[in-house]
Image 1 (cartoon, rainbow, N blue to C red):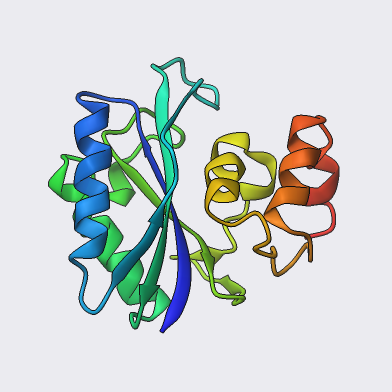
Image 2: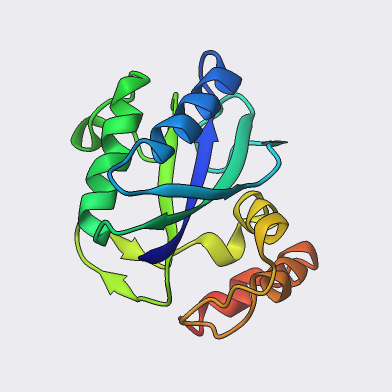
Amino acid sequence: MARVFIGIGSNVGDRHEYVRLAQRGLGEMPGTRVKALSRIYETQSVGPIPQGEYLNAVAELETPLDPYDLLDGLEAIERETGRVPRDERVKWGPRTLDLDVLLYGNRVISSDELIVPHPLMHERWFVLKPLADIDPAVVHPLLEMTVGQLLIYVEQGEAKQLGQRC
């Protein structure tokens, strides 16, 4: 069983309902158990496209699914909320639901379909804060720093410098 952290975000439609659907859907994936859920945070959108505020949270899972089967399951949950297919999406555009694999144990994965740890998580307060709610001692496998340490860097505005170490 792998210990996995999933980022949850929504900024279109009934955001609270989409976050609830995500949390329920995660627990319905084969053999998967939701071990913890963070608080939900409302945050400003990031990126070049003007859009509404996001609700963000993180879920901790225990799952037997391999990373790619897990990704397929996340995309199925996203589609249930009306999210457009990956090849039709506007990068950093508004979304009913966004589910991202942040960490999959201490594995490092780099493929066209999946990058783990999430490549921008160390720069994003809206990822690190809810992840720190669950476990601030989790270690980023490339940066070799805890989530709590990374959160301090982000809050001090120094996170982009860390990205050079990846």
